[in-house]
Image (cartoon, rainbow, N blue to C red; front, side, top):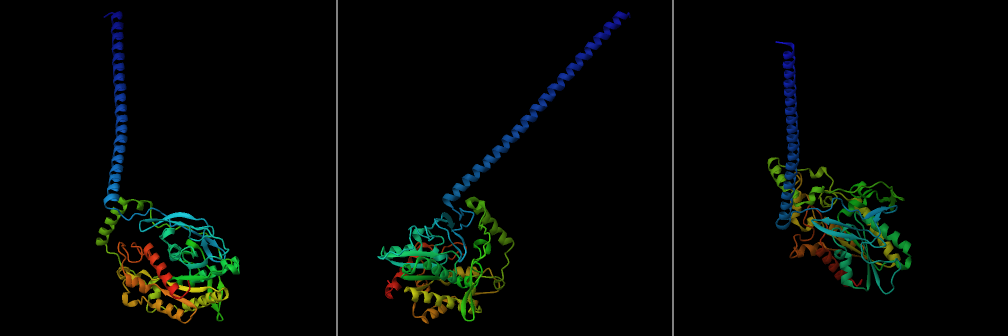
Length: 435
Protein backbone atom coordinates (compact mmCIF):
# COMPACT_ATOMS: atom_id res chain seq x y z
CA UNK A 1 0.00 0.00 0.00
CA UNK A 2 1.50 3.22 -1.01
CA UNK A 3 2.07 6.12 1.31
CA UNK A 4 -0.63 8.23 -0.27
CA UNK A 5 -3.27 5.59 0.33
CA UNK A 6 -2.19 5.24 3.95
CA UNK A 7 -2.51 8.98 4.51
CA UNK A 8 -5.91 8.98 2.86
CA UNK A 9 -7.17 6.18 5.11
CA UNK A 10 -5.75 7.91 8.17
CA UNK A 11 -7.54 11.10 7.27
CA UNK A 12 -10.77 9.21 6.70
CA UNK A 13 -10.44 7.55 10.14
CA UNK A 14 -9.71 10.90 11.74
CA UNK A 15 -12.81 12.40 10.08
CA UNK A 16 -14.87 9.40 11.21
CA UNK A 17 -13.50 9.76 14.79
CA UNK A 18 -14.31 13.47 14.84
CA UNK A 19 -17.80 12.81 13.57
CA UNK A 20 -18.23 10.10 16.19
CA UNK A 21 -16.96 12.40 18.93
CA UNK A 22 -19.20 15.25 17.74
CA UNK A 23 -22.15 12.89 17.62
CA UNK A 24 -21.44 11.68 21.13
CA UNK A 25 -21.03 15.26 22.32
CA UNK A 26 -24.30 16.21 20.69
CA UNK A 27 -26.00 13.28 22.34
CA UNK A 28 -24.57 14.25 25.74
CA UNK A 29 -25.62 17.84 25.22
CA UNK A 30 -29.09 16.72 24.27
CA UNK A 31 -29.25 14.36 27.22
CA UNK A 32 -28.09 17.06 29.62
CA UNK A 33 -30.59 19.46 28.15
CA UNK A 34 -33.40 16.94 28.52
CA UNK A 35 -32.28 16.09 32.05
CA UNK A 36 -32.13 19.75 33.01
CA UNK A 37 -35.53 20.36 31.49
CA UNK A 38 -36.99 17.38 33.32
CA UNK A 39 -35.44 18.57 36.60
CA UNK A 40 -36.89 22.03 36.09
CA UNK A 41 -40.24 20.50 35.30
CA UNK A 42 -40.10 18.38 38.45
CA UNK A 43 -39.24 21.42 40.56
CA UNK A 44 -41.97 23.41 38.91
CA UNK A 45 -44.47 20.57 39.36
CA UNK A 46 -43.48 20.21 43.04
CA UNK A 47 -44.11 23.89 43.65
CA UNK A 48 -47.42 23.75 41.83
CA UNK A 49 -48.49 20.65 43.71
CA UNK A 50 -47.43 22.10 47.05
CA UNK A 51 -49.28 25.32 46.29
CA UNK A 52 -52.37 23.34 45.30
CA UNK A 53 -52.20 21.36 48.55
CA UNK A 54 -51.92 24.55 50.60
CA UNK A 55 -54.78 26.17 48.72
CA UNK A 56 -56.91 23.05 49.13
CA UNK A 57 -56.16 22.95 52.84
CA UNK A 58 -56.85 26.68 53.21
CA UNK A 59 -60.20 26.57 51.43
CA UNK A 60 -61.18 23.39 53.26
CA UNK A 61 -60.48 25.06 56.61
CA UNK A 62 -62.21 28.23 55.47
CA UNK A 63 -65.26 26.23 54.43
CA UNK A 64 -65.25 24.37 57.76
CA UNK A 65 -64.84 27.67 59.64
CA UNK A 66 -67.87 29.16 57.86
CA UNK A 67 -69.96 26.03 58.48
CA UNK A 68 -69.08 25.95 62.19
CA UNK A 69 -69.63 29.70 62.58
CA UNK A 70 -73.04 29.45 60.95
CA UNK A 71 -74.43 26.20 62.34
CA UNK A 72 -72.25 25.17 65.30
CA UNK A 73 -70.52 28.28 66.69
CA UNK A 74 -67.79 27.82 69.27
CA UNK A 75 -66.93 30.13 72.16
CA UNK A 76 -64.22 32.01 70.36
CA UNK A 77 -62.31 34.92 71.88
CA UNK A 78 -61.74 37.94 69.72
CA UNK A 79 -59.07 39.72 71.74
CA UNK A 80 -55.76 38.33 72.87
CA UNK A 81 -54.99 40.75 75.69
CA UNK A 82 -57.00 41.88 78.67
CA UNK A 83 -57.60 45.60 78.22
CA UNK A 84 -56.05 47.89 80.79
CA UNK A 85 -58.23 50.94 81.49
CA UNK A 86 -56.18 51.93 84.55
CA UNK A 87 -52.85 53.66 85.08
CA UNK A 88 -50.46 54.40 87.94
CA UNK A 89 -51.61 56.81 90.65
CA UNK A 90 -49.16 57.94 93.38
CA UNK A 91 -51.74 57.85 96.20
CA UNK A 92 -54.28 55.24 95.12
CA UNK A 93 -51.95 52.80 93.35
CA UNK A 94 -53.95 53.00 90.12
CA UNK A 95 -56.95 54.86 88.78
CA UNK A 96 -58.96 54.86 85.56
CA UNK A 97 -57.39 56.44 82.52
CA UNK A 98 -59.10 59.59 81.27
CA UNK A 99 -60.77 59.49 77.84
CA UNK A 100 -60.10 55.76 77.52
CA UNK A 101 -61.97 53.90 74.78
CA UNK A 102 -61.29 50.28 73.87
CA UNK A 103 -63.09 47.01 73.17
CA UNK A 104 -62.75 43.73 75.03
CA UNK A 105 -64.63 40.43 75.20
CA UNK A 106 -66.28 38.28 77.85
CA UNK A 107 -68.01 34.96 77.19
CA UNK A 108 -67.90 35.65 73.45
CA UNK A 109 -69.59 39.03 73.94
CA UNK A 110 -67.71 42.09 72.68
CA UNK A 111 -68.16 45.16 74.85
CA UNK A 112 -66.70 48.66 74.84
CA UNK A 113 -65.16 50.44 77.80
CA UNK A 114 -65.22 54.22 77.66
CA UNK A 115 -64.26 56.75 80.33
CA UNK A 116 -64.91 60.49 80.45
CA UNK A 117 -62.79 63.56 81.08
CA UNK A 118 -62.43 62.73 84.79
CA UNK A 119 -61.72 59.03 84.29
CA UNK A 120 -65.21 57.85 85.26
CA UNK A 121 -66.86 54.99 83.37
CA UNK A 122 -69.44 57.22 81.70
CA UNK A 123 -70.40 58.79 78.39
CA UNK A 124 -71.31 62.02 80.20
CA UNK A 125 -68.69 64.71 80.82
CA UNK A 126 -68.55 66.28 84.29
CA UNK A 127 -66.95 69.12 86.20
CA UNK A 128 -66.18 68.91 89.91
CA UNK A 129 -68.43 71.93 90.51
CA UNK A 130 -71.80 70.77 91.73
CA UNK A 131 -75.01 71.67 89.90
CA UNK A 132 -77.28 73.25 92.55
CA UNK A 133 -80.40 71.94 90.74
CA UNK A 134 -79.30 68.30 91.00
CA UNK A 135 -78.46 65.82 93.73
CA UNK A 136 -75.07 64.19 93.36
CA UNK A 137 -74.83 60.42 93.96
CA UNK A 138 -71.34 58.88 93.99
CA UNK A 139 -70.81 55.16 93.46
CA UNK A 140 -67.68 53.55 94.91
CA UNK A 141 -66.65 50.00 94.10
CA UNK A 142 -64.51 47.62 92.09
CA UNK A 143 -65.05 45.95 88.71
CA UNK A 144 -68.75 45.33 89.46
CA UNK A 145 -69.46 49.04 89.69
CA UNK A 146 -66.97 49.80 86.94
CA UNK A 147 -68.99 47.45 84.74
CA UNK A 148 -66.73 44.56 83.74
CA UNK A 149 -68.17 42.82 80.69
CA UNK A 150 -70.79 45.49 79.99
CA UNK A 151 -71.17 48.39 77.59
CA UNK A 152 -71.53 51.84 79.14
CA UNK A 153 -75.28 51.82 78.54
CA UNK A 154 -75.61 48.53 80.50
CA UNK A 155 -73.63 49.27 83.65
CA UNK A 156 -75.17 49.73 87.11
CA UNK A 157 -74.68 53.50 87.25
CA UNK A 158 -76.26 54.09 83.85
CA UNK A 159 -79.22 51.91 84.86
CA UNK A 160 -79.54 53.95 88.07
CA UNK A 161 -79.49 57.22 86.10
CA UNK A 162 -82.15 55.90 83.72
CA UNK A 163 -84.43 55.14 86.68
CA UNK A 164 -83.83 58.33 88.68
CA UNK A 165 -83.91 60.79 85.77
CA UNK A 166 -82.05 64.06 85.20
CA UNK A 167 -82.62 65.40 88.72
CA UNK A 168 -79.67 63.32 89.83
CA UNK A 169 -76.01 63.40 88.84
CA UNK A 170 -74.54 59.87 89.04
CA UNK A 171 -70.77 59.61 89.37
CA UNK A 172 -69.28 56.18 88.72
CA UNK A 173 -66.07 55.96 90.76
CA UNK A 174 -65.80 52.20 90.31
CA UNK A 175 -62.22 51.09 89.60
CA UNK A 176 -61.20 47.51 88.70
CA UNK A 177 -59.59 45.54 91.56
CA UNK A 178 -60.17 48.24 94.19
CA UNK A 179 -60.68 47.39 97.84
CA UNK A 180 -62.77 49.39 100.30
CA UNK A 181 -59.61 51.08 101.56
CA UNK A 182 -58.77 52.54 98.13
CA UNK A 183 -62.40 53.57 97.65
CA UNK A 184 -62.35 55.58 100.89
CA UNK A 185 -59.03 57.17 99.90
CA UNK A 186 -60.42 58.02 96.46
CA UNK A 187 -63.48 59.73 97.94
CA UNK A 188 -61.28 61.76 100.29
CA UNK A 189 -58.74 62.72 97.61
CA UNK A 190 -61.26 63.65 94.94
CA UNK A 191 -63.61 65.80 96.96
CA UNK A 192 -60.99 67.46 99.13
CA UNK A 193 -59.66 68.85 95.85
CA UNK A 194 -63.17 69.65 94.59
CA UNK A 195 -64.02 71.80 97.63
CA UNK A 196 -66.46 71.51 100.51
CA UNK A 197 -69.48 72.67 98.48
CA UNK A 198 -69.06 69.93 95.89
CA UNK A 199 -69.31 66.84 98.09
CA UNK A 200 -72.02 64.36 97.10
CA UNK A 201 -75.46 64.01 98.70
CA UNK A 202 -75.29 60.19 98.67
CA UNK A 203 -72.35 57.78 98.58
CA UNK A 204 -73.04 54.13 97.69
CA UNK A 205 -70.23 51.70 98.46
CA UNK A 206 -70.44 48.49 96.46
CA UNK A 207 -69.00 45.58 98.46
CA UNK A 208 -67.93 42.17 97.13
CA UNK A 209 -66.31 39.26 98.96
CA UNK A 210 -62.80 39.79 97.59
CA UNK A 211 -62.75 43.34 98.99
CA UNK A 212 -61.60 41.83 102.28
CA UNK A 213 -58.63 40.23 100.54
CA UNK A 214 -57.85 43.47 98.71
CA UNK A 215 -57.84 45.50 101.93
CA UNK A 216 -54.88 43.69 103.50
CA UNK A 217 -52.94 43.22 100.25
CA UNK A 218 -50.13 45.36 98.86
CA UNK A 219 -51.41 44.70 95.35
CA UNK A 220 -54.49 43.24 93.64
CA UNK A 221 -54.09 39.80 92.08
CA UNK A 222 -50.73 39.95 90.29
CA UNK A 223 -48.55 42.94 91.15
CA UNK A 224 -47.24 43.12 87.58
CA UNK A 225 -50.77 43.48 86.23
CA UNK A 226 -51.82 46.70 87.99
CA UNK A 227 -48.97 47.54 90.35
CA UNK A 228 -48.81 48.15 94.07
CA UNK A 229 -51.43 49.82 96.25
CA UNK A 230 -51.44 51.62 99.60
CA UNK A 231 -52.23 49.42 102.58
CA UNK A 232 -54.30 50.40 105.58
CA UNK A 233 -53.04 49.14 108.96
CA UNK A 234 -54.13 49.55 112.56
CA UNK A 235 -51.51 50.99 114.91
CA UNK A 236 -52.27 51.73 118.55
CA UNK A 237 -55.95 51.49 117.82
CA UNK A 238 -55.93 53.98 114.94
CA UNK A 239 -55.80 53.58 111.17
CA UNK A 240 -52.60 54.30 109.30
CA UNK A 241 -51.35 53.90 105.73
CA UNK A 242 -48.19 52.13 104.60
CA UNK A 243 -46.68 51.65 101.17
CA UNK A 244 -47.60 55.26 100.45
CA UNK A 245 -47.14 58.08 99.53
CA UNK A 246 -46.14 57.81 96.76
CA UNK A 247 -47.02 54.21 96.12
CA UNK A 248 -44.00 52.38 94.61
CA UNK A 249 -44.18 52.41 90.84
CA UNK A 250 -43.28 49.34 88.78
CA UNK A 251 -43.61 48.38 85.15
CA UNK A 252 -46.82 46.50 84.51
CA UNK A 253 -47.43 43.93 81.79
CA UNK A 254 -50.59 43.05 79.86
CA UNK A 255 -52.29 39.77 80.70
CA UNK A 256 -52.53 37.33 77.80
CA UNK A 257 -55.60 35.18 78.27
CA UNK A 258 -55.60 33.21 75.02
CA UNK A 259 -53.65 32.53 71.85
CA UNK A 260 -54.16 33.86 68.33
CA UNK A 261 -55.73 30.57 67.20
CA UNK A 262 -58.50 30.80 69.79
CA UNK A 263 -60.15 33.37 67.57
CA UNK A 264 -61.27 30.61 65.19
CA UNK A 265 -64.21 28.21 65.51
CA UNK A 266 -62.28 25.37 63.80
CA UNK A 267 -59.40 25.50 66.27
CA UNK A 268 -61.72 25.58 69.30
CA UNK A 269 -63.78 22.68 67.89
CA UNK A 270 -60.81 20.34 67.37
CA UNK A 271 -59.05 21.49 70.55
CA UNK A 272 -62.09 20.65 72.69
CA UNK A 273 -62.52 17.25 71.01
CA UNK A 274 -58.86 16.50 71.62
CA UNK A 275 -59.14 17.52 75.30
CA UNK A 276 -62.20 15.30 75.77
CA UNK A 277 -60.35 12.30 74.34
CA UNK A 278 -57.23 13.11 76.38
CA UNK A 279 -59.23 13.44 79.60
CA UNK A 280 -60.66 9.95 79.06
CA UNK A 281 -57.23 8.46 78.47
CA UNK A 282 -55.51 10.40 81.26
CA UNK A 283 -58.03 11.69 83.84
CA UNK A 284 -56.89 14.99 85.36
CA UNK A 285 -55.76 14.76 88.96
CA UNK A 286 -57.80 16.75 91.43
CA UNK A 287 -56.17 19.75 93.10
CA UNK A 288 -55.78 20.52 96.78
CA UNK A 289 -57.92 23.55 97.68
CA UNK A 290 -56.37 24.19 101.10
CA UNK A 291 -52.88 24.41 99.59
CA UNK A 292 -53.92 27.20 97.23
CA UNK A 293 -55.01 30.81 97.67
CA UNK A 294 -58.58 31.62 96.65
CA UNK A 295 -59.29 35.32 96.92
CA UNK A 296 -63.10 35.30 96.96
CA UNK A 297 -64.06 31.85 98.20
CA UNK A 298 -61.81 31.76 101.29
CA UNK A 299 -64.15 34.14 103.13
CA UNK A 300 -66.83 31.43 102.89
CA UNK A 301 -64.66 28.75 104.54
CA UNK A 302 -66.03 27.73 107.92
CA UNK A 303 -62.56 27.73 109.47
CA UNK A 304 -61.30 30.91 107.82
CA UNK A 305 -60.30 33.59 110.32
CA UNK A 306 -60.61 37.04 108.83
CA UNK A 307 -60.80 38.97 112.10
CA UNK A 308 -57.87 41.19 111.11
CA UNK A 309 -59.55 41.94 107.78
CA UNK A 310 -62.83 42.73 109.53
CA UNK A 311 -61.06 45.03 112.00
CA UNK A 312 -59.64 46.94 109.03
CA UNK A 313 -63.04 47.04 107.33
CA UNK A 314 -64.69 48.36 110.51
CA UNK A 315 -62.02 51.06 110.79
CA UNK A 316 -62.45 52.09 107.13
CA UNK A 317 -66.24 52.07 107.55
CA UNK A 318 -65.95 54.41 110.53
CA UNK A 319 -63.70 56.75 108.51
CA UNK A 320 -66.39 56.86 105.82
CA UNK A 321 -68.97 57.62 108.51
CA UNK A 322 -66.85 60.52 109.75
CA UNK A 323 -66.66 61.92 106.22
CA UNK A 324 -70.41 61.50 105.84
CA UNK A 325 -71.07 63.39 109.06
CA UNK A 326 -68.57 66.16 108.28
CA UNK A 327 -69.76 66.69 104.69
CA UNK A 328 -73.42 65.88 105.22
CA UNK A 329 -73.96 62.96 102.85
CA UNK A 330 -75.86 59.69 103.29
CA UNK A 331 -73.75 56.54 103.40
CA UNK A 332 -75.08 53.36 101.75
CA UNK A 333 -73.48 49.89 101.61
CA UNK A 334 -74.54 47.64 98.72
CA UNK A 335 -73.56 43.99 99.23
CA UNK A 336 -73.09 42.09 95.95
CA UNK A 337 -73.50 38.27 96.09
CA UNK A 338 -70.85 35.85 94.94
CA UNK A 339 -72.10 33.78 92.01
CA UNK A 340 -71.58 30.59 94.04
CA UNK A 341 -74.13 31.87 96.55
CA UNK A 342 -76.79 31.95 93.83
CA UNK A 343 -75.74 29.37 91.25
CA UNK A 344 -75.44 26.16 93.27
CA UNK A 345 -74.53 24.04 90.26
CA UNK A 346 -71.65 26.37 89.39
CA UNK A 347 -70.40 26.00 92.97
CA UNK A 348 -70.62 22.18 92.80
CA UNK A 349 -68.80 22.13 89.45
CA UNK A 350 -66.10 24.35 90.92
CA UNK A 351 -65.63 22.12 93.98
CA UNK A 352 -65.47 18.96 91.83
CA UNK A 353 -61.91 19.85 90.80
CA UNK A 354 -60.66 19.56 94.40
CA UNK A 355 -60.02 16.44 96.45
CA UNK A 356 -59.99 17.89 99.96
CA UNK A 357 -63.16 20.02 100.29
CA UNK A 358 -66.89 19.77 99.74
CA UNK A 359 -69.91 22.00 100.39
CA UNK A 360 -69.81 21.33 104.14
CA UNK A 361 -66.52 23.25 104.32
CA UNK A 362 -68.26 26.47 103.29
CA UNK A 363 -70.89 28.78 104.73
CA UNK A 364 -71.88 30.92 101.77
CA UNK A 365 -73.88 33.59 103.64
CA UNK A 366 -71.31 34.08 106.40
CA UNK A 367 -70.02 37.41 105.16
CA UNK A 368 -73.53 38.67 104.42
CA UNK A 369 -74.53 38.14 108.03
CA UNK A 370 -71.38 39.86 109.29
CA UNK A 371 -71.92 42.84 106.99
CA UNK A 372 -75.55 43.07 108.07
CA UNK A 373 -74.51 43.07 111.72
CA UNK A 374 -71.90 45.77 111.01
CA UNK A 375 -74.47 48.01 109.33
CA UNK A 376 -77.10 47.42 112.02
CA UNK A 377 -74.61 48.43 114.71
CA UNK A 378 -74.12 51.76 112.96
CA UNK A 379 -77.50 53.34 112.41
CA UNK A 380 -76.15 56.02 110.08
CA UNK A 381 -75.45 53.39 107.39
CA UNK A 382 -78.14 52.15 105.00
CA UNK A 383 -77.44 48.53 104.12
CA UNK A 384 -78.72 46.81 100.97
CA UNK A 385 -78.09 43.07 100.58
CA UNK A 386 -78.86 41.84 97.06
CA UNK A 387 -78.51 38.14 97.95
CA UNK A 388 -82.14 37.54 99.07
CA UNK A 389 -83.48 39.22 95.92
CA UNK A 390 -81.23 37.28 93.55
CA UNK A 391 -81.88 33.98 95.33
CA UNK A 392 -85.64 34.50 95.27
CA UNK A 393 -85.90 35.53 91.64
CA UNK A 394 -83.71 32.76 90.24
CA UNK A 395 -83.35 32.57 86.48
CA UNK A 396 -84.32 35.47 84.25
CA UNK A 397 -86.20 34.21 81.17
CA UNK A 398 -83.94 34.11 78.14
CA UNK A 399 -80.73 34.19 80.17
CA UNK A 400 -78.29 31.28 80.20
CA UNK A 401 -77.12 32.31 83.65
CA UNK A 402 -79.26 33.37 86.55
CA UNK A 403 -77.03 36.24 87.55
CA UNK A 404 -73.56 36.11 86.06
CA UNK A 405 -71.89 35.32 82.77
CA UNK A 406 -72.10 31.62 81.86
CA UNK A 407 -68.46 31.00 80.95
CA UNK A 408 -65.45 29.84 82.96
CA UNK A 409 -65.58 31.23 86.49
CA UNK A 410 -66.24 34.85 85.73
CA UNK A 411 -68.31 36.22 88.58
CA UNK A 412 -69.44 39.56 87.15
CA UNK A 413 -73.13 40.16 86.70
CA UNK A 414 -74.83 40.56 83.33
CA UNK A 415 -76.79 43.61 82.13
CA UNK A 416 -80.15 42.38 83.44
CA UNK A 417 -78.75 41.85 86.92
CA UNK A 418 -77.04 45.24 86.90
CA UNK A 419 -80.44 46.72 86.08
CA UNK A 420 -82.11 44.68 88.82
CA UNK A 421 -79.52 45.90 91.32
CA UNK A 422 -80.21 49.52 90.29
CA UNK A 423 -83.96 48.96 90.72
CA UNK A 424 -83.51 47.46 94.20
CA UNK A 425 -81.18 50.31 95.17
CA UNK A 426 -83.76 52.88 94.09
CA UNK A 427 -86.52 51.08 95.99
CA UNK A 428 -84.58 51.00 99.28
CA UNK A 429 -83.33 54.59 98.97
CA UNK A 430 -86.91 55.79 98.48
CA UNK A 431 -88.15 53.71 101.41
CA UNK A 432 -85.46 55.25 103.64
CA UNK A 433 -86.27 58.78 102.42
CA UNK A 434 -82.76 59.29 101.04
CA UNK A 435 -84.00 60.24 97.58
